[in-house]
Amino acid sequence: KRLDWIGRLDATGLVRKLAVDALDPELRRAALQRITAQGFLGDCLLTERDPAIGTEILARIDQASTLKRIARELRSRNKQRHHALMQRLAQLAGATGSHGVRDEMASQLIQQAEQLARGEGKGNRSEALRRLIDE
Image (cartoon, rainbow, N blue to C red; front, side, top):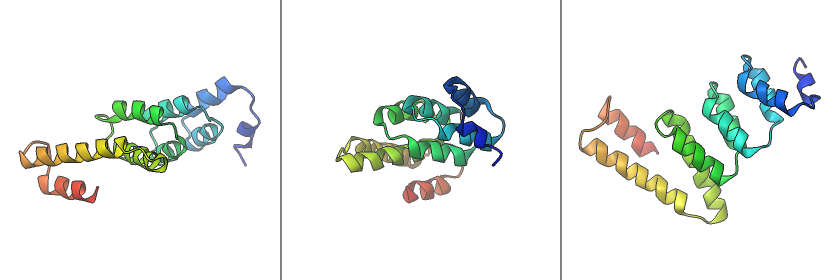
């Protein structure tokens, strides 16, 4: 394979640089697969341009504190990724028996529904309501 050389790299700094700055998505993906540091993966999730790679990064983060930190930053920047992140947090919380994340998600859904009912928000309200129901 053309990216096998990444698996042989010993320079952590170079692997991290490739994970963040490489223009080629496959090169970023290969570098990210070498990284296990939860905080760094979270930082990469914030800046990753490719949705598929973002999904892969999210699946590898299992530290609730990292997910919560990233959720705060993504809330207004990337709604889809924020929603996926909240689902991941709920999934992890379900595995540990914690209900705080589930309750937070429920509160967010209620807040969004109330905003729709008041006529707040942009775009097509019926479409937004449909998306909200699907959640």
